[in-house]
Amino acid sequence: MNWREVRDATNVRYLLRTARNLGLSVEACLQGSGLDEAMLGAGGRVRIQRWQELAVIRNLVALHPKPGLGIRVGGCYQLTSLGLLGYTMLACRNLHEALLVSTQFRELTLSICPVQVLPFDGGVRMSLDHSVLPLDAQDMVAERGLAVWKRIFAELLQRPFVPVRVELALSRPAPVEYYQSYFECPVVIGAASNAVLIADADLASELPLANVLTRNACAALCRQLCDGLEDVVSPLARQVLQVLISHSGKLPLAAEVAATLGISERSLHRRLAAEGQPFRQLDERVRGRLAERLLGDSDLSLDAIAVQLGYSEAASFSRAFKRWTGLAPSRWRAAQREAGPSLNAPSITELSSPSS
Image 1: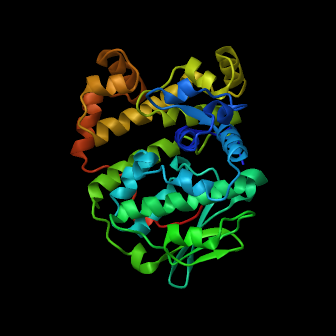
Image 2: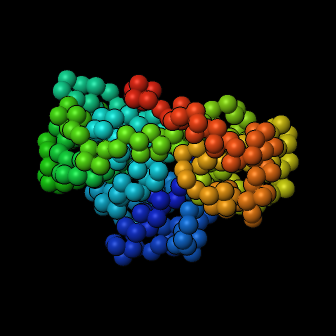
């Protein structure tokens, strides 16, 4: 488990919302995490490291050490909490396809634990491995994960979602009736793992907001965000790319990336140079890929794309893009559209592996 992996702060915001609802001290929840309430409360996307979320989880559990806490936290989530991935799932043909998309782009999920999806007779079993966490955090995180799945699946289906069965491997569970009331299905306490069993009938249910064109476009953007990490093996360069690709709305400067990673800007440049991956090279790699996707899959003007990529004017963006590709942005876009639909959009067969 890479505890320095950079991730969205959505989970922490929901942890703090739960703390407020319970009348607990937000300051106490953030103790030792390196986070502050003002930063998390500000508008815009905030990036943190995995260990910081874990620190907040452990503080919240210490302040409210009662079974069922994770169910409370899970109640804060909506499909939009997943950002672009949520919209991609919403546009899928059925729940099964939505699950495949979530496993395909697991880097974009909010889960702090490994998730596995395996078939069973009559459906699939979606389990969460909380053993990677400290003992005091395991129960809350497991409850939260299963509660979030129930909410998100119901939102995808646009109707109540009732699992075949819920299995819980908690050290200090609430009474079984509590979980039965929430999940509205049989619940097994003392199971080998924490899991939700989903029936084939639900998996095959058509999603009311399915749209193949939207799904393909959104999936291509998800892939764009994930692909930037595949061939980067040096540890710091990989962390930098994680920060850059997650800020698809507006790419951060080197100083902002360094602050997210908890090091100075000077150290960032020095260490990346030692790894043979200068910051400018990583930055332009992400900008180039996002530029191609925005030009190919949207009708945004060059001015709008330039702003989204952090350029002060379209002319600066055009010069950079021509340096990357040899073509002006307008010519590149025209050539792509003459060639027909994007070949980079994943097909259903490409999304068919439910590995976790």
